[in-house]
Amino acid sequence: MTLSLPVSAAIVSGDVLVFDVGPSASGSETAGNWNNLSGSSSSVSPITDAIRFSDGASTGVGLALSGLLSGKVGIGGIDDVTGPSNFSSPGFIGSGAIPETAYQDLAYFSNEDGANSFTFSGLDNSLSYTLSFISRVNAGTERPSLTWDIGEGQASVAIDPENNTNIYSFSGLSTDGLGKLVVSIPISGSDTAHLNAIELIAIPEPSAFSLVMGFCVLSFLGLRRR
Image 1 (cartoon, rainbow, N blue to C red):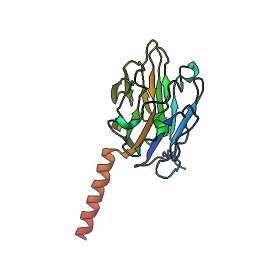
Image 2 (image 1 turned 135 degrees about the horizontal axis):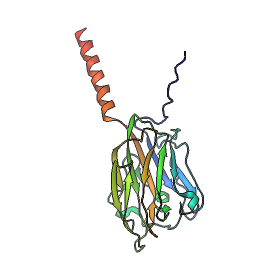
Image 3 (image 1 turned 120 degrees about the horizontal axis):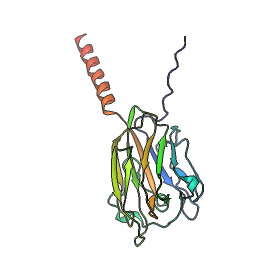
């Protein structure tokens, strides 16, 4: 009898993925090993096989926005977002400085009284993840503060995107057991949320790392006894 083993995700520990959430008004996308979501207010193409920032290799990771059929989630809305010269942090943890084409465009979520989210899929359940993102619009653009829920209750943050200089980072996030990591943004009335650029880093689970280190120590002690 042949045993059927589950297929592991292609993403591995140490992988860094970066996403430009939509091309700018001029139609440009972020070059290099960035993953670009693109589309309009009625159609946003999901990413199904994100590439790794270091060398452009495939990872099998997907990224999709929710609520597309409602026409209330899409690419665009506000362009030419204030530059990063006043960022409290000038770049992401793993990929460094954020290109202008990535911070000057965005996706918007305005699905009134509905579920709004972006979902990573194809992740390895044995790893944990660090997620960083930008949510910002031009100064003088009035937008409400909204609470984002990261990783199904693992973390949350209140964000006011007007002239926001923060890069939000959350470490030690785990999947839902099905290879997914979901960020949900509850929205009511005519409120709108915005998302400019994302970074996702895969890291070993602390328990797995401890197990590997323990095995290495035992192996070392065994060699010394010999």
